[in-house]
Image (cartoon, rainbow, N blue to C red; front, side, top):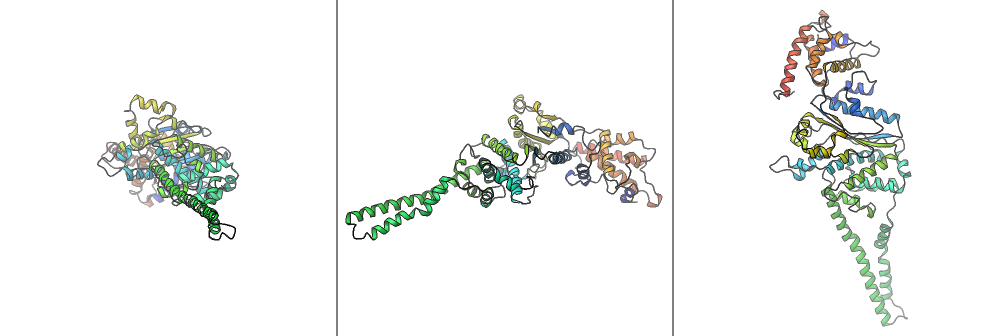
Length: 514
């Protein structure tokens, strides 16, 4: 007998325990997007989620396979449902779950030495803030331009362009500034030009005057040259000399205008762009791209107080977050929520606790985590919990973890795992089929407590799924289809339980890879 035949007998259309990675788990997606089944979520989920109308911070530590990514996906799904029900008070989600880009950018600047930790020690809070702003800006701009980026575009409503054009002038300038500084897809300033046209932002008055001076400044000099060369009968030698001097003065003035606009201003803009590029260390934009974009924003916005150009200065970033909030408010958003996950997965991190610590510790800043209408969900590997408890009192005082929703360890009991597996089992039942229980798939000599105890030894959802998958596979491989043995005997349960519990223990001791 094969496993498909076994499940077909029970009207189960898909193996509920095949998925081991939450991002690729069709059953989890079905549970998230369908009716929430009892037991399908961790008992601490509501504490982690918090009150959606007031985004808050949660810090969660869990083993590999304990369901951190599943919780992130469930939070995202719950937020999507909340946003549909509250179109005028939505929560904007920043998925900060792929740290490959920030890590790679810092490694390119500071890597190559003997100490592999050097690039990671360079991580600052402002580096994370820049990366988050880039993700948010990318989604907003993609929605306004009608594009389909790697990440889903922001939900800005049915007519986002009309809403954007109706915003007050300061808000439109805020949106243009965010795009000019943080849009990762703008490689030559063309998207800034497109955004400017979309928002119908006219050039600044000073910019118009300079353009007129460059375009028409030669006219007075040319006119004076004509009078000097063709003075007529009334102009004597003295007046002709005066015309010649005026021509030279006007010509020098025009050359000065050209020099300032074509040489001095470009040099100053490139120097400014280099300073911004040096400070924005986790975004992929080049100095040339930044310069091309900054050339198109209001000159008043090119100051130290506005652009992130002072080393480690966080106030310009907080101001950028506030601009983002003000802009999003016009599209029905009242708060921001950042989801941090998969910290151990970037190629250059490769699960190293020291590298993860250097990345995450800057985020544990009370001022950042307690912003108005702002929350961060930190779903972290358990190795960082051990590192956290080794920190000093001053570190805890700065982080103020007592103000955050703190889950010291994401644990699963046998009954919790039993309920979770039951929920997955029924989520895979054919439409119209009556609900069943996990215990129904085992022989009469197997009690519910036997299954619960076996699952309790697995500790994590991922290992529980592996255990059940192996139980059914082991049973099916030892019986024929003609026998019609549709229930797993206790002998198979006990033998698989011993093998899998040993594997889990060896995994925790670092003897086996999975």
